Length: 456
Image (cartoon, rainbow, N blue to C red; front, side):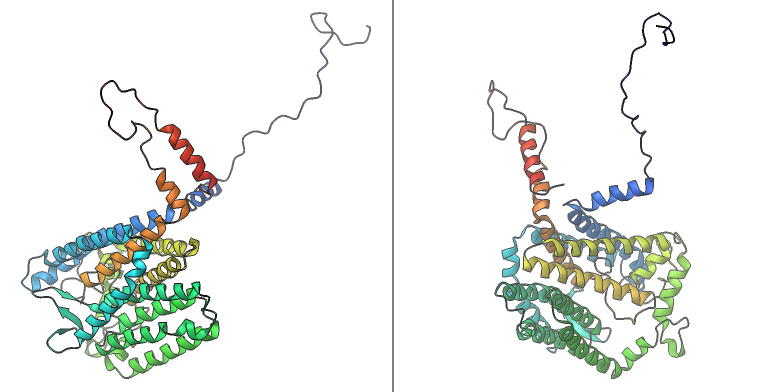
């Protein structure tokens, strides 16, 4: 046909239908956004809290053992003791604490609740024994210790923290089940009187640092119980007034308060410890002077392996080491908050929140004192500083958090998937027995059931 287009072969051209627009090329996502989404998916997995609590606490404890060995060698030699003396005692306490952690991790929630009253009664009994002449021992001016013979001593007030957490969580959980927490008298009584009894027994010995931690645990429990703002503010005002009186009437506590932000030891070297803690941190630089190369631990910094071990860490491992320790405590605190927020069991929520408040508050008070931002309260860094009396109940409390993290529905389903993907069924097979089916069919059924129940 004239005028019509022809192909080179003489055949009529093929009429092509209007096609769809070409598919867009691969999208180039922002790598930062992609990394953020991957981290967020990993963060939301059901076993994240379990890994953070178990791994974070293990790393803090191991790093603490290393720093205790490094920071305590000079002190031990000055006391005519072997250089590894304090390290061996701390390692023994960590070994016993690991047993307590595993026991607490394996206990059911009912057994945890059943232990609340015996632990509280035992802690109160031991704190009363501390004040009995001939039984109680004074250390650094505070009579809060009981001698167990030889060089072993125990501080019952450390177990009072664990007792308040377990007993307070059980008490508030039972009252919530009976719908009694809407009344202020049931929220305060007997929780607040019992806490004030523990605080009184501790303050008789002069240990205000431990009393501050117990007060923080009390406020954490009241906050989780949904205390009204005016009720919360009332209890806080009473505690602040008592704290002000106790500080004002003690020259030692007033001197510690006056060392906030000090850069010079002052008259009579009143701020010697606070200032040399700052010196240790300042001389560490970015990566520190090297493990074991601290200068301040050579008699310049008191309590280098206990209350001020964070300063020696900053001197030997630098800013990188101190930030790593802070990151581990932050991860531990986040995981505890996540466990408390995701559970449906009121006891688990109160206990997890109480333990998280205890560990984070004590870490903040210790590190704040080393940095010169808070008064020196004489509390150790949890899981890190030297001291078996503080390490044992803290590791038992970590075991509680691990048990609660494992008990989440999503975590239970994820742990159930951790079976061998290949291999024979359970049970003995004689020769010639036909091999049973592989385990991947069972795994597939488990995986589908886990996904249907909310597993990611």
